[in-house]
Image 1 (cartoon, helix red, strand yellow):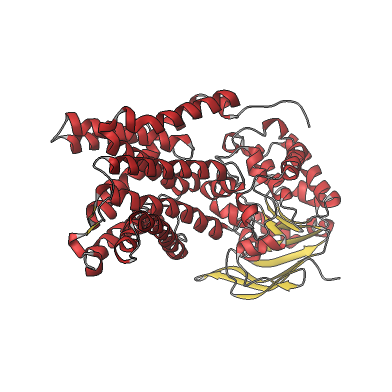
Image 2 (cartoon, chains in turn blue, red):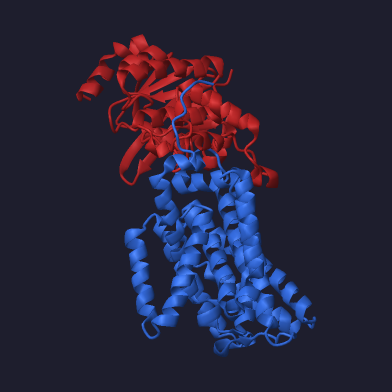
Length: 323
Length: 247
C-alpha cells in the first residue's frame, strides 16, 4: 500500500467511526464495546503475542482501573466530568502500579508457569473485591448518573472509548516500529539468549506489562460507567468472559501483529453480537464452538495465516547483491 | 599483564556428580585459547559457570581483573564477556537484520533508547557484519528458516555486533559442512586480529582447534588433564588415552 492510499484509508475509517453514532444510533453501546474489545485484544497482544507471555490475568488491570475511578467519582467531590477524567487517570496509574509490583514477582515465571500464575490474579481480585465492604462487597458499586439529556450518555461514552482505542493503537504502532518491539520479540523467541546478550529483560518485560496495564486501567473506568454497575465477578474482574476473550481475539486475528488483534476483536465481537441476537439461549454454546473452531483451524490467526501464505508481502525475501 | 579471563580452582557439582573439579585456566588478552576434552568432560559446564549461568561452588572467575563469579548472566554480558551456544540460539521469529539490530551492546536503556528507532549506524553495522559472515543476501529472511549452519554464522555475527572483549564459542564448527568450516575459521581469526576479540573456543574438530588456538586446555572427567601448546597436546599420551576411553 502506498503512503497516500494508506492515509486516505485511515481518514475514511476515521470519518466513518466519528459519524457512526449518528448513522446507526441504535447500536452505540455495542459499538462502544467494540472499541473496548479492540483495546482488550491489543493490550493482551503486547505480552501474549509480541513477548510470548500468555497472561490470563490482564483483566485485573481493567477491574482495578474501574474500581479506582468509581472511588474517585464518589469520594473526591469533583463534578461529573472532572471526576470521571481524574478517575480515569487515577485508574490508569493504579493499574500501572499493580503491574509494576506484580511484574516484579510474576514476570520471572516462564512459559506455562506464567500463564498459570496469572490465572489466579483475576479470580483472587474478584474474591477480594467481592468481600471488601468499602468497594460494596458482593453487591458492587453503582457509577454516578450521567448529567446530560437522555441518549447523550451513549454518544459520550462511544466517543470516549473510541478515543482510548485510537490512543492505544497509535501508541502501539509507534513503539512497535522501533527497538522496543525488537527487544520484546527477542524475549519471545529466546529469553535465555536475550539475557546472554546482555538485554535488560526484566526492565523490558515490566515496562511492556505496564503499557498493557495503562490502557486497560484507562478503559476500565469507561466500561464501568457505560455499564453503570460494577459487579466484582461479572464486570470488573470477569476472568471467564473478558479475561478469556482478550486472548481469543488476539489469537483469532493473529498474535504478534499490529492489525491482527484489531481484526480478531471485530470478527469476534460481531459474531458474538449475532449469536446473542439470533441464537438466544444457545449463544454460549455457539460461542464455545466458535472458540474451538478458532483454535483448531486458525492456530496462527487470520493475519498469521496471511503472513505464512504471502511472506514476501511482509518483507521476507532473498535480496541478492552485495553491500 | 593480567589475563582477560582468569579462572582459578573452580569447583562445580550437581548433587553427587562433580562436573568441574579444581579447574584453572587463563585467556591472555588478544589470544585464541582452545578447550578440548571428550563428551561429558565438563567443558560446557565450565562455560556456563564462567558466564554466570550456574552459581559456582568454589573458586574464582576474574574478567579483566574483576571478580565476576557472583554476577548474573546479563550483567556479565554487558561487561563484554559473551558466549555462543552449542545448540545454536538465534531469535527464530525475527529476520536476520532484526536479530542483528537487537544484539548491540546494551547500556542501561533510556526512554529514548527503549522506544526510539534503531539508529542508522546500527543498521549499517548490522549489514556490514552480515556481509562479513556471508548472510547479506538473506538479511530479510526469518532467522528460523535458515539452515543450521547459517544460523551458526548468524549467531556468530550477532556476537560480533555486541562488540565483546572476550567471546566464548561452544563448538562453532559442529554441524557445518567442511567447505564452510574453512571460511568460518578464517572469520574467527579475523575477528580476533582485526576486531581485537579474545576467544576461548570449545571444539571437537582437532584440525580446526590445533590450527586456530595458541594454547590448549584439555578436560577429562571434570578435571584439567593437560595444558600446553597445540603440538605438545597432540602428542600427550594422557590426552590420546582420554579421547580413546582409556582414562
